Length: 404
Image (cartoon, rainbow, N blue to C red; front, side):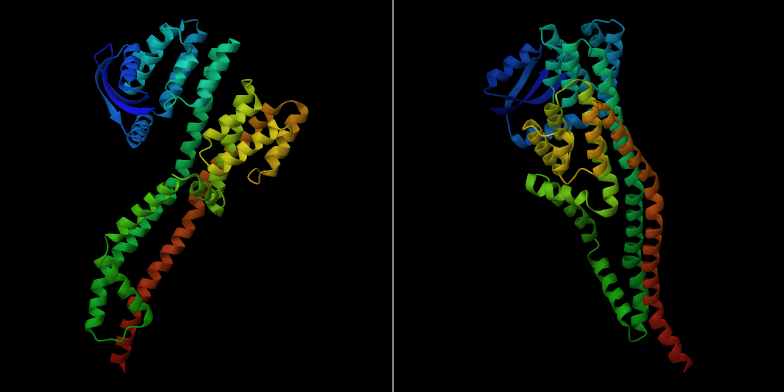
């Protein structure tokens, strides 16, 4: 199958652009026409453009948009509103044009006889897999409104977790930028002027002053490298993530660095526990639950460990034994899972674990500023002390000679 970019109009005259996978251009025309769209233009596209398009779509539709959609649909279905009428009302309240167009497409597919879960699955780049699976379970069990409500609650927890992680990283990042800017300012602007005066005096400069002088000359002449190097590092890290092999090693480093581990490792454990709690409560089999959890972890180390555990569970091992065979799961998690297996309340144990690891992440985000602040102050103080010493040492020699 090839990728085709298209431009079309919907029933309200709104221009819709996107990329579809199809065998031929005719198939694209048929697909779009079946959705009630008037095709303006279709042409073959590259895989890179498709990835950029998918990333752009998911960037425009936030997790909060999906939470609001799931919550509103749950409330309306619980109130007895037919699903098509509920979707009509939701479309009228959506501000995000991309999501509005998507929900319109979902409604049209349902009108043609498609189930809600199948209609959502057609937009898997927008709606997470766990939403599709739980909606499918809700349709089969007659608990659709409860499934949607549970998904909305789950996504809200994920959003809160992401916000907590961002909050924990803001202060260190801001402090690092300001500290680096202060040092660069001294090296590029202040020190060169002082060093010029010292050199004109003809004083023999000590080693520390010579090192500072060379650093200031380098910073003054090649300041642009200090802007380019961080960009190159970020691009190199992103390139590493393209390969599963290098991504595995990068993700492994992130969960082993002492301070970073407290945030990333506990976040991953909270995400794993919450996913399993939700899926088991919904009645999804443990092997399928492990597959879904592996896909959303966002960490190659955890993904491989979960999939290996799933294979061992399918082969007949207990869940706790399968998890203990992987070195990424802590003893507490394994012990609680073992208790849940023997008592038959596995979902409750995962709920306890999710709450526990959420709290660890939240506590760390509150303390990280206080932990890093003294380190930054000491580091900045040492740097400034070295600079001042490098300037004062030759000046001291001058005053000593004058006094002599």
